[in-house]
Image 1 (tube, rainbow, N blue to C red):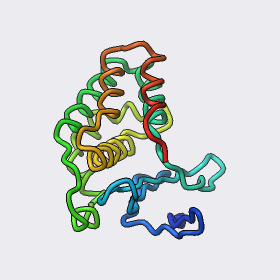
Image 2 (image 1 turned 45 degrees about the vertical axis):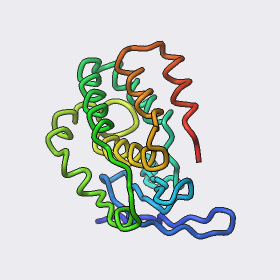
Image 3 (image 1 turned 60 degrees about the horizontal axis):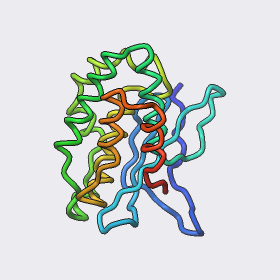
Image 4 (image 1 turned 135 degrees about the horizontal axis):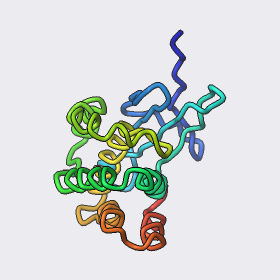
Length: 185
């Protein structure tokens, strides 16, 4: 029996926020993008996860610290594979181009973003066994966070700085401090 998906509409300060796109990443994760307010073509990212109890979590905003801790957990069991995964993310970062129009923002294709990386999803799938997030979710989340960051600031660096710190084995506390400094919404 198929589980009904929860609504991704939320209210903040009396304003109803309806997503531009909603995508079911897998049986336990839904991600949505909304019109943001930090720049003309900003996107806001939210997600929900199925809990162990069979109920959906509340709508959450992903933070850099969330995916960073997840990567660190994966790194404990799969150090080399996780470093390759980080190299893949660094490559995505280098190729990410900001959103430059309302049409581009409205036409974001979340499934298409994932379909471009079927090979990598398969290559890194074993990382899904550790940590909180699946590789599929992390790839989509990373792409959206990079897009968001570069759309809001062409000279953005936070995501890349965290990636570089993780990849180089930088001091754990420095990496976590950098991930925590990322602007939260």
